[in-house]
Every structure is written in structure tokens, then in C-alpha cells.
Length: 75
Image 1: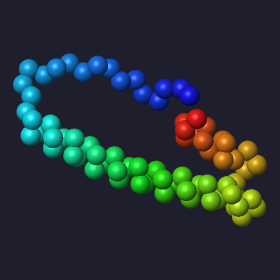
Image 2: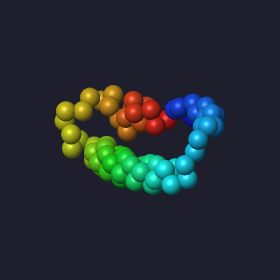
Image 3: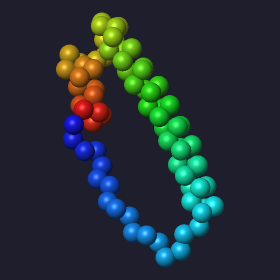
Image 4: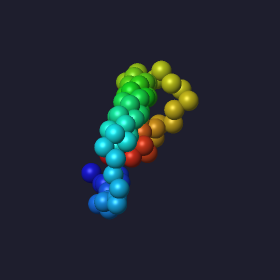
């Protein structure tokens, strides 16, 4: 699998605040949870659509679950 992002080592700040850091982490996790739920919902809908052949006449023959994954960069 290709890397989606590259994470570089952050520089240590001159001044660091414990309480602010804890709050930032809480906000990040709250956003992560929301994004994860949204991703799961969208992937479930797409999977259901592709699991019902012939149900969607607007899909081109080349639009498959595999192509969906490739276009969304999940693989």
C-alpha cells in the first residue's frame, strides 16, 4: 500500500503547556471520531450499491467496487 501522507518529526516548542496539549488531543480525537463515522457510513452505502448488481443503471460498467477503492485512494 502506498503512503497516503508523510509525517515529519515535529520540532519541540520552546514553551509547552500541559493543559493546552490535553485539550488539543481531546479535540483531535473528537474530530477523528466524527470523521471515522462519516467514512464508515459512506463506505457502507457504496458497498451496498455495488453489492446489488443492476440496481443502479446510472453506473458505467467500469465503475466497480475495485475502481471506487482506487479512485478514493483506499488501496
